[in-house]
Structures are given as C-alpha cells and as structure tokens.
Image 1 (cartoon, one colour):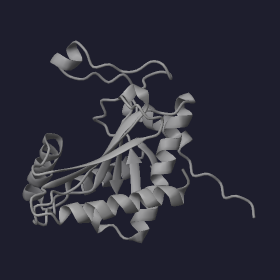
Image 2 (cartoon, helix red, strand yellow):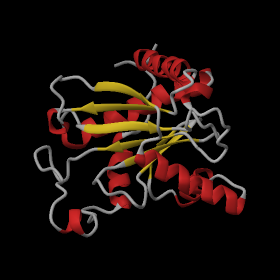
Image 3 (cartoon, rainbow, N blue to C red):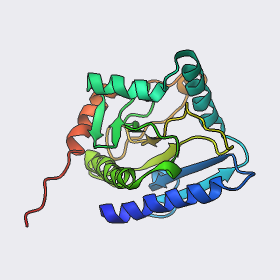
Length: 228
C-alpha cells in the first residue's frame, strides 16, 4: 500500500475510535491486525478488526495499572521516560520520524517484536492531528516493509494499539503505543513456539533486542526521493 492509502486506514481508525468512544457503555477500543496464515489468517491480506468492549481487556489493564503507578509515584509518564532512554542509547531503535519511534524493547519475547511509540504524549488515536496521522502511516509502511525484506517473504504478525480507556476520565498516565508480534525466528519457515519451560516458567529470548533492532534498522531506512 502507498502512504496515502495507509493514511486512509489511519483515518478510519481515528473515526471509529471517536464514534465508539462516545458510546456510554464502551470502556475500551482495541484496534488490531493479523497478517499471514502463520497467524491464523484465512485472507492473504492483513486482517484488521476493532473490538469495543464494556471492560478494559487484561493486557491493556495491566499496562495501564503500571503506567498509573509510575505516574502517581513520580508525576511523569512511564513511556515518555522510556522513550527518552531509548533515544539516548540508540541501540534498539529501528526507525523514527518526527512523530513516532519504533524500537525493539529490551523485554521483547518474540524475536523481532517491536514497540511503536508516539513522540508526543497523546493517549488515544482520537486525539491525533493531521501530522500524527501522516507520520503513523509513514512509519507503519517502513516497519512492515522492513519485516518483508528480513526473510524475503510477506512477514506475518499480530499488531495492535494500546490507548486510554473510554470511561470519560482523562487518564494522563496513558501513552499511545503499538505492539508488533511477528513469529518468524531464523528464516521464512522457522517460527518461534511457546512450549515447555516457556509456558510453565518464563519466555526465553532467542535473539537479543539489540541484534534484532540492528537487522531491522537497515531494512527500515527511509527510501531516497524519486527523481523528478
């Protein structure tokens, strides 16, 4: 997809967030996308969904609780501080633009897991302005294209955004971000499985976040401008 085409998708996400958030019984809007048969998709194209629920899902609720605890203790945003640390170190950065940063987080469980963070402290897609809308489309194209180039295949993944609950409260602790969970490990045919100790004890990291970021970074470079 071209950037303008992706921008139309972002525009639809923003519109749906605003409309669904206005319903008084909705407490959370979860946008996600699955890509590839390896991730259970029956369609060859990325399969996007929006689930609007009357409760905050478990994964989002745990993140929000941690962000709230940090904000209450220090008076600052956890992900703003985390992003500042990653930008200082530069080791796990994959690609950046004026509004977003993609990083392989140090806690990554999946081999090429990435975290997409907004540079500005916004808590929801519904708050995006035109610059953020365009920048999100641009960095999504670079990040997904890097995955495709990594093993020379249409890169499978599950991707989704986490944002503030829609309960009418301000939720200053919440920082908009996206998660990419791709299952491929060492090639186009070798995937990571969670079994044995990983399910009963703890996940094992098959590749360091730094080496994953280094491999993706070279494939996510901004393409040179086309000649006139």
